[in-house]
Length: 413
Ligand SMILES: [Zn+2]
Figure 1 (cartoon, rainbow, N blue to C red):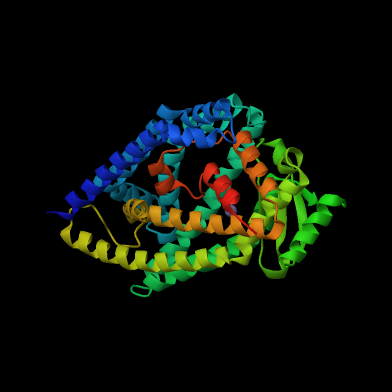
Figure 2 (cartoon, rainbow, N blue to C red):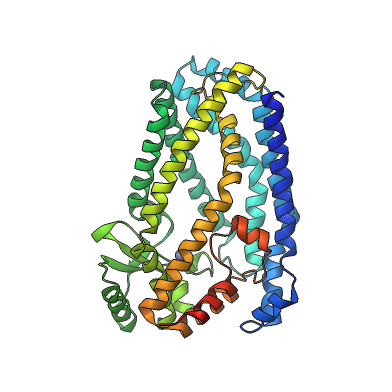
C-alpha cells in the first residue's frame, strides 16, 4: 500500500476519533452512582451549570475542528503548499530565510483568518454569556491582538531557528533541534514573567498582613525560598482564578490572581499555594522538560525517517526537509503522533497533580480548606462535574474535582 494512502487513512481516523471524543465530552458520565457521589458536595444546579457551560458552542467547536482538518489536508495532500512556496520564492528572489518567514506567515494567516469568528464566539460571546469575561469589545480586540503579535514573533523565531538547523546540519539536526527547543523553552520560562506578563497585567507585591505572614510561614515549612509574592490583576479580564510560580532557584516568584484573593479565604489560598509548592518540591517542571526533550529526539528520528520514505515514494508533494512547503506535512505528522502520545502525557500530568495535592495536604494538614477550595473553584469556573471517562483518560491534565475531593477525604496525616 502506498504511504500516502496510509497517511490519509490515519488522517481520516484522527478526524473520526476527534469527533467521537467530542460526542463523549458532550454526553458526559450519566451514571447515577457518580451523581450520588457528586451530590455529597454539590447541588443539582451545580451539575447542570457545568453541563450547560461545557456544552455551549458545541457545534461551533465541531465546525472549527473540521475546518482545521480540511485546511491541513489541503496543504498536505494537494500541491498547494509547494505552489505557495514557489510563488513566495519568486517574489523574494529565492532568498531562503525570507521565504521561510513569509511562508510561515501566509500559512498562519490562512488558519488565523478562518479562526477569527470562532475566537470571537468562544472568547467573547460565550465568556460574556456565562459572566466570566469583563472585557469590552475594544479591550478584547487589544488582548487578542497582543496574543496574536506574540504568536507571530515567537512562531517566526522558532521556525527560522529550525529552518537554519535543518539546512545547515544534514544529519546532526536530529539532536540539534531538541537541544534548541530545550534552550528556547528554558529561556522562555525565565523571560515570560519579565517580558510577557507585564504586557497583559499590572502586578504589585502583596501587602503586609496576615495573608503574607501565612505565605511566609508556608514557605518556611516547605523549606523553600521565594523572592517575592505578587498580586496580578486578572479581575480586569475575567472572574477565573489561579496562582502559579515562575522563575528558577532563588529568583522564584509567586503570582496570585486578585480574583483568587477576593473569592477565597486565606486558608484556602494557602491550600492552593501548597499545591503549587508540591509541583516544585517534586521537581515536576524539570522532569517534564527532560521527558519533553526525550520525546523530541525520538520524534526527530521518526520524522526524519518518514520524510525520506515519503520523498522516495513521491506520492505526497515534497521538496527538501528544510523547505518551507514541508512545514504543513511535518505539522500533520506531529499532530498524528501527538494524538498517539496524548493519553500518556495526560496520565503523567494527572499523577503529578495528585502528588502536588498530597503535598498541599501534608504541608497544611488542612483537609477542610483543601476540599473547600475544590468546591469553590468548581462552582466559580462552572466545571463539568461529570465528565466522560474517555475524555478524562485521554485529555484531562488534572483528576476530576470529585476525584480530588475524595482523595483528600481518604488522606490521613
Ligand atoms: Zn497543579
